[in-house]
Image 1 (cartoon, rainbow, N blue to C red):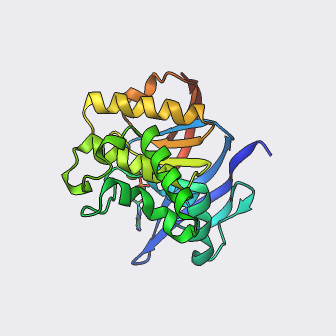
Image 2 (cartoon, rainbow, N blue to C red):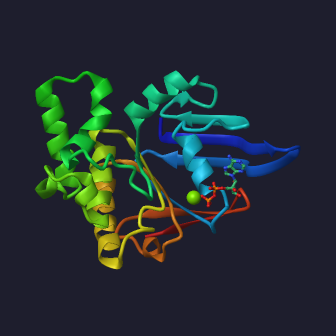
Image 3 (cartoon, rainbow, N blue to C red):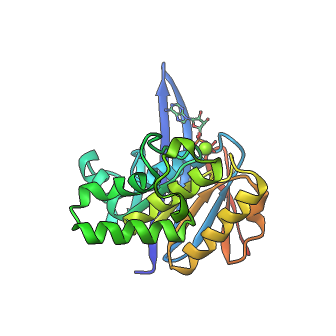
Length: 230
Ligand code: ADP
Ligand code: MG
């Protein structure tokens, strides 16, 4: 099967005090295995909502969401968290690290429920930190890292479970130019590793990537335009 994510006729609305707000409307989107998709759109256009539904963090109001062959839209939450642990690595704008854990311990967290043997845990943590260029800070507590280092720790944590899919929400929003460029370099490695990647961003640094990516523009909860950039 060539698609890792297939979304059909997806709707998401919120009902607040009798008013219905449509956060996502009529979304049809397919992501090929190994593809990188850039979701663009101004704040409030629905990017985070869409990523959350792809990750199984949130349920759609209606429509189909098939991720790696599994229809996740109606899966109960306890199955969703297992599904997420196996298939999805997430990188958030605010990193969501445990501040008093070391880098190594943060990267280890997603492996805990997997019941791997000690050598396998060590190997995955070491390799993930290498890809993310954070091995040299392995023993430092996360609270003492710089912004760029925090983000690289979050990348290593996202890689530890060896997921096929990497979802990033505004990954460079809190980074300076140099660290944003380093992020793009790591992204390029992940692309070469064959990861399927979706990034929500409005940072123009993603307009010129050193590898092929597809841009999907969102506006008021709809996909309005698609194009190719590299
Ligand atoms: P983006 O990530 O592109 O900035 P979001 O997906 O965060 O956009 O939000 C899309 C719209 O959905 C926004 O107008 C937001 O206020 C609204 N929204 C998000 N979550 C909720 C919620 N729980 N209840 C009501 N409205 C929400
Ligand atoms: Mg957002």
